Length: 114
Image (cartoon, rainbow, N blue to C red; front, side, top):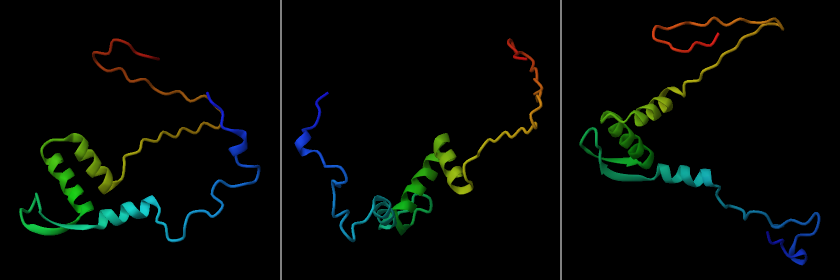
């Protein structure tokens, strides 16, 4: 691995960008939000009518179209967006004592951990 030239390295306490980011420069999330709000006249794939829609609307309609054709991942994304992601939490409080967890045996199980 090549090491940088010691003479070109920043001195202790010296910034590589002393002036900082220029005033008025937009961050990435602002730029993305603005582009997602940009509108376009298209044929709505669901209603079949020509409409002026935002990029965000167009992408959501594309996901709906894929989900209607049976794309499970598109369906999951839509449901997560509409209702929030499903979270799985297990909270067992024992105050320091041993907690036994019952094991359910299903018909056809070949290995069972107990």
